[in-house]
Image (cartoon, rainbow, N blue to C red; front, side, top):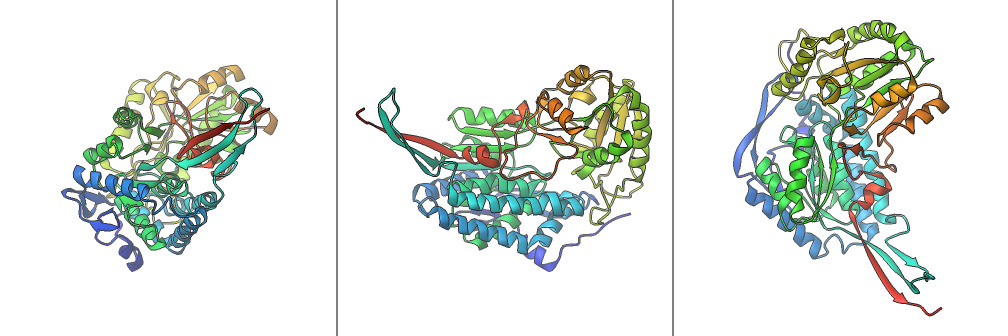
Length: 497
């Protein structure tokens, strides 16, 4: 089985001759090109010249000048809001093209590329566009009444922090462009987007739409580059803030590089999230939803609930049902509407994920469902796999695989389950199946920035997304996420009693 490129003429126009975008000008990268592959076939799609460190510095300088001369900050909040609404409209008008570009270079199944990865960021951008006009809670300038102890009154002014480097991942690119660059623009900042070199075309398409929407030159810049260009974006004196989504290892490097100039850093990193089945819940009522939640986008998501905890008495039944569900889960062509598990992003990443599975099996783990590779001629596919007979301290239960791998663990008491669920250095997401009031009580005891009950629903734009412990620093979206891009200025004066 093999697949061929399926981009429409309109989609190809959005990504034609992919280049960097610096100060309103499209420029070829000056470094060696990176090859963009189709993960579903392994075929090379095209070579994209990468930016040099000098070009990354030019993008920083352009964003700095655009911020300092007021071409964006000098606009009224309402005018900035209108530009962002036009960008959201253009994303909606080009929805099918954005979806197909991501399916082509990211391998994301079409149904998920449509819902989570395109429709959601469009709606979140509309929220940000409204926020650009309304400002943070209390408004852009808030009056402070006389304080009885200090004897002062004053103003609290919220201002954009400045130039933002937006460093984005491959698995949810449009979400990242909106949550980072879109939020920066809504706050009045200027920004440089640097996408994963694995999915540069999504960023080219987004940037072309931003240009069409009327974002002024220098306000939004695009660097297609590797680690050296990225280092400029984290270290340059002209950058005031770095927002990064990716691995903990790279996140640590970003933090170190930004520390010398005391930049604000927002990190959204890894996860090893629990999926909890409470006593009294039937396995058959939750196993399908749990596994589909885990294996969507081939498990390439920081918030996937990869560790499932079930009462010991239903462990065997859950495992039997899981084998049936996984056997029916379609792995294959991401362009087909009924495909749930597409390819992993690259062959070396698949090798890494399979290495975790093989080491777990060598250590005594048992395959309860799935496993191996599908009978597909080309591409970077592996079947989803659920493992049992594991301990919470095992590598497979502690390290993020970022692939279609889950573990099933039994528990004998709620206290034991809570301790097991919290036994991780991460704390990004969790899901709990059970009676509502009891599930809420358990949610209060889980160390996680996000907990859904009985499946939850789509991410809300007005609520922040972030994690505990090593899942990151700061938050994205919502009121708190918006405020990450703002500085606070206190202006005070004495007031007689």
